[in-house]
Length: 223
Image 1 (cartoon, rainbow, N blue to C red):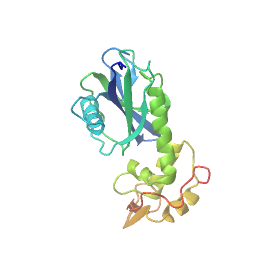
Image 2 (image 1 turned 30 degrees about the vertical axis):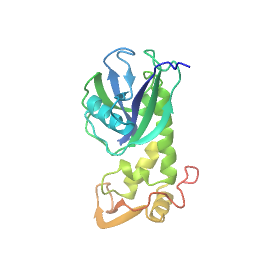
Image 3 (image 1 turned 90 degrees about the vertical axis):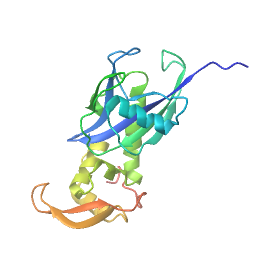
Image 4 (image 1 turned 45 degrees about the horizontal axis):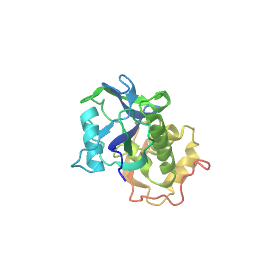
């Protein structure tokens, strides 16, 4: 039995918190198909590279950014998802602190951070891929220490709470949140320093602690 040819691509859902918005890294396509449409960064996997290497290379080529750790999100293989040929894509997810402005390159006409709420009608099936990435991020904030990836090396509880509020899209009770995160073993490591950058009284500075999983979890319904 002869099998039809197909190609493999990687696409990247890179999320950050900028101000009051959860933002995704998007590029504007500089060639067909979908010329001029916004899309997630990504491209074809070369014959001599693995998926992680391809994802890192495509991100650097199209946006000039290196975001560090990438995790596989999901695979997408609908027969008609790419009009050029049968293409299976492996999406990757990265959650990062606020980054500098990206620089478009290769086949990207532009690259920029776009609030997720404004990222619509993307090329290919990237609306679905982005939505899956956002929901993965929201869920991971419940059970893991991943929210600290959106923060700098040192941060206050108020800054961490703002990450949860922006990603989850809901306001949280400050006292309840402070009690939960400071009482979660291994989540936060006090630096012994304080800051007044949030205004008002000096606030305790923390670093990310050693915990990877949160016990108990910070459930959206209970926070």
